[in-house]
Structures are given as structure tokens and as C-alpha cells.
Length: 507
Ligand code: NAP
Image (tube, rainbow, N blue to C red; front, side, top):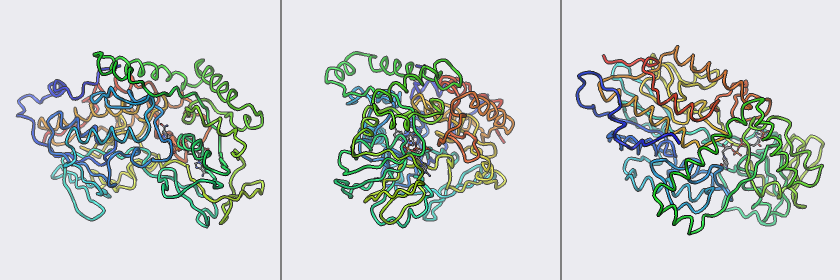
């Protein structure tokens, strides 16, 4: 696994110094969002001597998606040892694929260990950001109207932070209980109820099995099916954990092996590759093995390529769909009535509760923050045809402003933490340039355009461009979320930090 010794001070030494520059100047940095992205960035900045930083978090707790998604059996599809910072590894993960409480506790423990508490402003939503070219500073405005000035802003809002509700006639007239999977209603007891689940993505696949256990009847409404692969999850034994703790380098070796194994799966996402055919066969075999009924199986096998939308991994969802008290409904929902969900064939299914599992407003990125950059240009206007950013991090005309997990940096085959760490490194270098005397760092419009063209061309060679519904695309079909290649390519690209692509102003 490529070296990510980000906390290592030698990285600072490598940051280019302007000839004759004085000691690094003190910079103020505002980080928006206290999820995985923002917390890791803060740790890195502190590790590199940038002390004057503030993290704004609109919720009352850190943790991002791992704070918000508390539905039954919530967890991650990436193994624990890989879904954690390379500079903050743990030997004592309790299972191969971590569950939400353990991930949230990991983030909290990072906050405690690096004493970030005093730097985090919880319950503080940033609603606007304005660049002042004369002072070379950003002003962040909170929902309460307070303003805070910074030399640099880092956006750590993530791609999956705003639950998306479907537009279904009558949904607001439903008389029973209704909630979104990302805002689970833990006060409501589902025992013995008739339950409709709208949406069958990564979230539904995890909570449907435990909910079906409680329900009298569960209707899984499916707009389109998914490709599935097995989830080789299991708890670590105390012997495993002791080995990780006692054998020097074992956890690092294990992590590297996981990384390599996940990275090799990239090739299955290339359209027309032989490996894609193999993945399709494996997934078809997996579905066939767990769904003996041919009529149900026919509903569940997609007609689009593997990887067009997220491949789901599960060892209990397909089995749950075979239960007598569970029905997969693939007839489109036409309306919701106060006590029922009605489909196009006219069937009324009476339900007590509707669980909306329709995902997130993923293509909006920094919305709804109103961001104005140089010459008062609004980011929403710049992104009117879809979000785009150089290396997924920087947008021309928005100097000293950097995005984590930004446009075209999402993955379907490896850990997003690896991408975040590549972004930390790039941002640390940009900040290093500023600390060593530059006033602003902006990206050249031409470089950003060429970068975007390369990414979009690359994406056309992938399964993401095939014909299916996915949260990777805007309504016009532009793929704004995914990275088109192996993560190593991104690591290499960001590591090069091409100064010729940047406008570095020393005036
Ligand atoms: P999602 O993957 O976007 O799935 C949304 C589901 O709702 C899809 O089945 C979609 O159908 C359906 N849907 C959307 N709009 C609809 C409408 N108007 N009418 C009917 N159905 C509609 O959302 P998610 O399951 O919350 O997961 C989001 C992402 O979060 C995942 O892809 C993953 O990146 C992350 N996540 C990860 C894990 C994990 O690591 N295990 C767990 C949960 C979430 P179509 O398929 O037809 O679009």
C-alpha cells in the first residue's frame, strides 16, 4: 500500500519553500464538517504545525454519516482495518467489517486523542462563505448570523449527508409512521407491523433482515435490482486481536493485503473487461444460490453491468427476501394513501409504517452553503451543469478553498479513507505554499478543464456510464461522483502536486 505517513514531519520539509522565505506564517483554517474527512484533516494540520484551526459541525455530535445512520445493523462494506486512518490504526477492531457503533466510537476516540474537542463548534451550521480578495480571506457565516474569517477553508461535508425523499403522490398524506433510514425513529416499535420499505440500496440491504424479523409483513419496494456479492464478515477472535497487538507490523501487513485485494477489483468496473464478465457470473451464482424461486430470482437479477450502481455485499438480505412474510414488489409505486401503498397494477398494500430508504442528495456536494468566490462568482452557478473540481479538491476562482471527498472522488471498489488521505496530502502541500509566503493558491481554469475532460472520458470506459439509476449521476447523466480508475492513479496524481496547474500569488 502506498506510504501515507502523513503525520510524519518530513512531509513538511518536502513542502516547497520559496527561496528566501521566512519561517512559515501562521495561517487560520476553518474546516466545515466533523465527519471522517474533517476530523482527519484537523489531525493532519495539527501534526504539521497548523495550530489555528476551527471545525464547524452543524449537528450536536461528530461522526458524519456514522452519527446519522443508526438503522438496525448499520455497518460498512469496507473492512475495519482498511476503513480507518493509516496514521491511526487499531489492533482491536472487534470484527472484519465494522458496525456503525464501533466506527462512530473510532471517530470519537480520534477526537479525544488529538484533543480536538475545544476546536470543534458543535451545533454550528455554516450557511455562507464569501471570499474577500483584498484581504485574501474567507468569511464563513453561521445560520445564527455570526461570521468567522479564515485564510483557508476546507470543506468536509461528504457526499451522503442530506437524505433524499422520493417524489411520490400522497406520501405526505400517509397516516401511519414514516421516516427516512438515515434518520431512524428508534422510539417507534416495528414489532408485529406491516412495513413498506421504499428503496433497496446499501442501507435497506442491511436493515431489512433485522426489521423483517420483527414485522408481521414486510414489502420491499424495488425500482431496480442490484448485483450482490457475499460479505465475508466475522468477529475477530481474542487470538487474532492479540496477534495484531503483539506482532510488529502485522496490522500494517494485513491492511496492505486488504488494500491490494480491493484495488484489484477495480478492473471489474471497466466496461467490457473479462473480469467484469466473471464478476457478473459470480454475482448471478450468488443470487441463484440464495433465491431458489425462479419467479423471485427473475426480479432480482439486473440487466445492467456489474458496478453500474453500487455492488452490494450481504449474507442475509437475499435469504430474507425468500421469507413467506416478505414480498418483493417491483411494480412501480404510483401513490401513497393514508393507510396504503398503491402500485401501477392497482394493488393496494395496507401498511402501518413506511421506511424511506431512497438515499441522499449526492450530486449537490456543497449545497446548500452559498459560496461566492473571486469577483463574487457563485459556486452554484459554476456548477450549474454538474459539480467538478481539479483533483476533486479545487475549483478555479475559489482560492484557498479545498474540498474533501469532492466531485469524482467516490469509489465502488476500495476505501474512501485512502482517497481522503491523498486529499490531505495535496491540501497540506497547498497550505505549505501559503505558509511559506504565498497569498493565494488557485487552480488554473485550463488545467481544471483538461482534468475534468480526462476524468469524464475515463468514466465513459467504466460500468458507471452504463444505463441504470445510480446516485453517481446528475439528472442529465453527467457522472459527478465517481473516480474513474484505480485509487493508485489518484494517489499518484495528487502526490505530484503540479505547481504549473496552479496560480500561486505572492503579491
Ligand atoms: P442508495 O444506494 O442511493 O439507494 C437508494 C434506493 O432508493 C435505491 O434502491 C433506489 O432505486 C431507490 N430510490 C431512489 N429514489 C426512488 C424513487 N423516487 N422511487 C423509488 N425508489 C427510489 O441509498 P442508500 O441505500 O442509503 O445508500 C447510499 C450510499 O451510502 C451507498 O451507495 C453507499 O455508498 C453508502 N452506504 C454504505 C453502506 C455500507 O458500507 N454498507 C451502507 C449504507 C450506505 P434505484 O436503485 O432504482 O435507483
